[in-house]
Image (tube, rainbow over the protein chains, first blue to last red):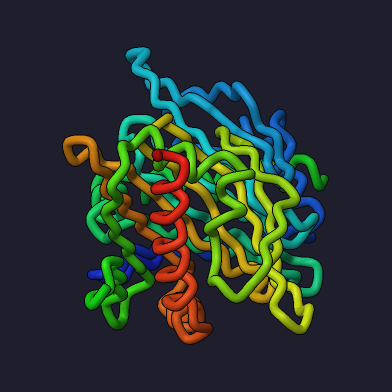
Length: 160
Length: 160
């Protein structure tokens, strides 16, 4: 593909990151792939890491924790709680990289129906501009682009 | 008191609100008054409302919901989940006014020990500058000032 189909917007001097991506699958399928642990484990993260899910309990008050392991065995943990879950429509959750403890961000993901296709839009807000900039500097854009491409592949498989 | 002892900072064009207030009580007591429902119900909110707590489960993954009722019986519900709780030190939680559904903010409150006194510092970040401005326009500063004064009064009583 010649153009990156995922749009990542991070205006300088703000604590926001917005991610937009369209998928050739209906919202119910994209929501399923975003909430069932056995599907999430197949796409969340960059291709070069192994993912292990300790918990992925998508309901208001539910918690999640997962670990990415790179090729030399280094582990990176991530955790959070779900504030609100509207089936096939919206998920609001906290997100913390355990390597930057206390720098928790809030993510609002909407699943917009585009006549049978789906636009995912995630608005992430960090507790400071500096925390947002540190997250960007850590290479998260690479992980987001890989994740969205891998999700598209999983959707093609489960929707087939 | 001639000066307002609570500092509320909301820089224009940002989604942040910072609240700072010092109390004549040690962190363990301020933390207790901030987490035990039978104490929280005595100070959280402006003086002119009645508060009812449906749930106040301060632990990671715990939820809370409370309702303020004004003199003509109108009810205002608030809810969220706790992401992280460090006893006597820090609470990280989501916050949603049910009258503005989906506009969830993330609040990080630290309890700093000032040689036996305590500085509470709450950093709130909203999903957009517009959502932050709408919250400010709703009169939340009045509620914060009352809450902090009332907490000071509760601390004087339970610490005596």
